[in-house]
Length: 231
Length: 231
DNA sequence: TGTACATCAGTGAACGCGCGTTCACTGATGTAC
DNA sequence: TGTACATCAGTGAACGCGCGTTCACTGATGTAC
Image 1 (cartoon, chains in turn blue, red, orange, cyan):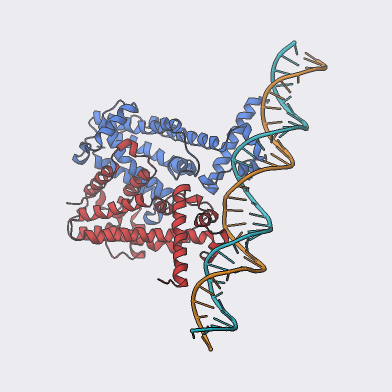
Image 2 (image 1 turned 60 degrees about the vertical axis):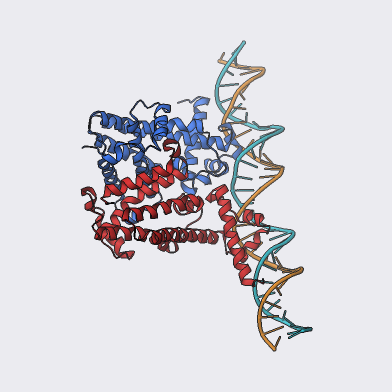
């Protein structure tokens, strides 16, 4: 089976990214290096410039890929769970979020971990992908609110006045066509989910809880009950 | 005022750590380097071996210092807040926790961020300091339970059976003389606090909430209400 | 179908750089008598 | 109080290493006629 030059180019391009990911898994996101990537591929270092114009370029592509891959994963969980109760749908989506983080820990660190020294991400490239993930959760919150299946408990029913204006702005600017309260309730859940995953990823919480998957699930359930979600 | 040789030795020892911290703030925890530390101090690189037997030694000392400093800070907030309501005491302690993380972001990353490539922390040295911070929060939970000021809401009143045995073990092993439920309730709050701080530290959540301090405070209050704390 | 030319993947040497650590040393500071 | 000696902070050169990037190049692959 003959392959064209551009197919082979694309294949090598992708393999470079694959090897880069592998090496980040071993040496940390800051340990990425052109020379060690090409060494492992049996190439010399300058060969990489046929595929990426610099190391920063490679990193940016890895980050954008990660965001999109996470968004794809979350969206597909969302699609599969449609028709179930809102608690079940949110649980499915948030389990998918965790699953992705654990399957691709390096990519999750790339997005949410320490910045890579000397590297500055071009913000306009990464923002849209973050929005995709958030959109799914906000969407579910909004639907549940409308259906009367999410009746915010008193503490969550009103947005603190110091926060409300920014929340309004974000809702409009990011193009969520949804009540602000839905955005607020999603934002409230974010730290819980993020904290659970971060603590699991760096193995801080396993020694304390043992069965971390159960702990995650129970915490999410508790969160949903607390904000006023009805199963 | 004459200084002894050992005083001067201690002073230089401390200055090395101070400069190391500064440089980590600029170049990330992975960017620490003997040569750039000594350069900034007007010394040559080998001079550092009068004070630390290797780079890893220096890092270990920085980590241990960080843990203890955090614990000191939290304990002193605890002491100052004694006599107030449990909600107020917990709030004071958790605000102190956040305050420390924001004041010394590098140290917080050293403890809870990405591991430094090639560096492995000797676990027996770092564990006791983590316990110190936790002990304060667990202590408050236990007192509140005993005083009837913490009446766990149904979802938090029983520990999930998959988690209970580990929780028991930790309670005994780490020497908290306290009901397991107190340890569990503290553990439940951990991801929220950790997530909030991590998201703030890397500036992921500011654009969404605007006034992050208020958001933190409100989230902690909500958490305390959810688990069944009475003000 | 065969030839001439253009494209392009990858090489190898070199650039200037920074790194942690070792070693034999100098010279100042402290201590014992 | 003064002298002889020991201690120790810091130096400068060297070690072997890895890094990103540039450059002129070779040789294979693809394209146009």
